[in-house]
Amino acid sequence: MAVPSPNGKKKLIFPGDWVEKDDTVAYTFFAVVGQHQYPIHIDGHLSPLVIWAKDSSGVLFSFSDGGANCCYETKLISFNGEHVSVIDPTAQVAHDFISYRDKLGITCRAWPHEYPNLFPIG
Image (cartoon, rainbow, N blue to C red; front, top):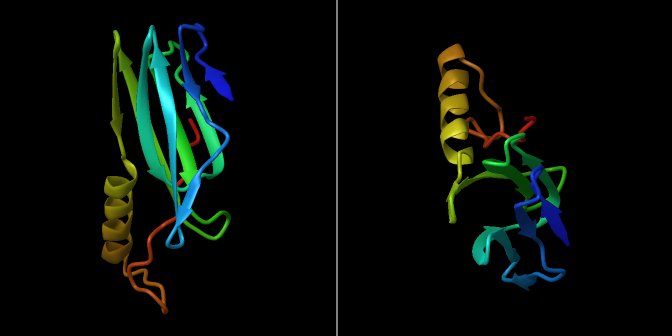
């Protein structure tokens, strides 16, 4: 499956298969710009969501490794000319959220630093 950018010059390509090994799911999809395909590796494949920037300069890609229960991650894929960069803001956002929750004295009884389920909205 291909998900084109708003300007139609870039796209994400999702092959129809993934590999399960040792209770983890490894999956590779591709960011395509011009004649170049950039592989993007993730651990998980459930509930994917693609949110393109209106100017096609980047895309938020969210996915889960376990579905509704946990845990969602987000990749920020940026296009700069013929180059693609990928960052994972999930870890920093989770750290900031847990620090803020600790500052307020909010804890979970079972796991005081339970990892939050994060999902982009725009």
